[in-house]
Image (cartoon, rainbow, N blue to C red; front, side, top):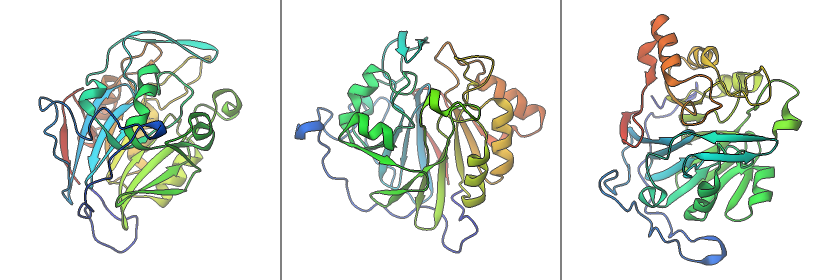
Length: 300
């Protein structure tokens, strides 16, 4: 993995560029997590500086810790306990607790927040966690609502986190015409130099914007926000099994990690559904199954 998208250049990841600056919470207060994981039981406290490895830890739902290039990234923090959470015009029911507590995760260099206005992507405890990130990258509208340390990205806009380039990517949270109801969402790409490493879809269906990502990027790993979410009617708001199969087709060199498919009542398809579909089509080797709370290293 870690192939260039048709461009010349080396593969793998660049060496780490030193340790990140000390993180501070909003208002300049020092973060309580002291810049490293608090428990050696789940994490060894060492940053993944290898040019060829990424470490993934699925915490639950859309929340995934990615460690690569000497940096730590966390998608959509959801750390609240099971229960009902109002989210706009609907109430979302969380079924399972996070596999890793926020104090065990510790500080991260960046939170990659696909959107801030739905509780299954940013629940109350996840919102409380945000000041422990060096930066929160999200939509332009979300950054305005959240304030510091949030930075809004438009699609195809870059932001450097150490030596890792984070690019905002197009996403659409439902069928055409749903944008005014469901709001802005964004995906992300992680790259070093000329090397495309990871594509994080965010809450999206498979649409022309995803095809454009496939034309312009060639990642070694795709993180698919699946679950075939249905909260507003008989239509999907996130990737369904067919969409994940399409992702595997348009990103032929990538392995696929499926998240956002368990832990909430409104998810109508699971990882098991995706796995059965891939195996039926002899594509099972493309999937990476993560055990919640257990760090897993992959070669890039």
